[in-house]
Image (tube, rainbow, N blue to C red; front, top):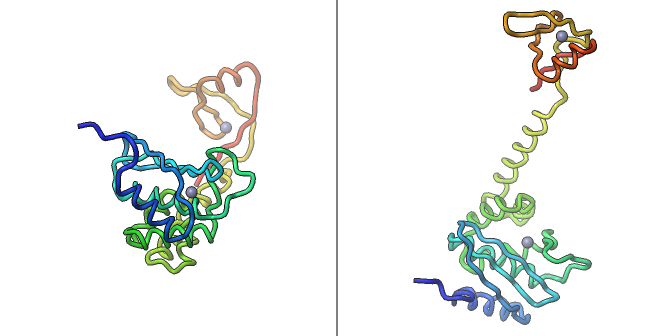
Length: 202
Ligand SMILES: [Zn+2]
Ligand SMILES: [Zn+2]
């Protein structure tokens, strides 16, 4: 059976319910299906449209629609370009997490899902005191710190020196540092002498 066109009944109801609760005009809801699990959405306040591309995961559909409705309820961002993501600031997340909790998404689940999509959400979720948010925020910060640490400048293992090419069986090495030299680098060093240094990363 083919999915009928247009938004499902629960989504239309949710838009009406959220907008009535906020005493704000409901947007036109555009809905299409995508052959993937996660959903995505966009809100065009000036055009009066909330558009959702719905994946197969029902919780993600609901979260995506509520996320877009949080944009819809918010102040219209100035100088926003078509398709650009609006403000994901503290007041946005207070609104969004409020909608998630009020419309059937458990806070722990909302934090995990929103944080997976927009890592910046974790700090706001933590500030809002949502369950699991402080831990998720710290875990994310640790991950970023680990990544930064692994990008430390490489350590010099052998100081810069003039390359001296020697044969080693089928290979050519630098006689000073022992490094194997191949390909374009070898071709270049054969044409004219060069210098290099040996670095270690990590
Ligand atoms: Zn957004
Ligand atoms: Zn060398």
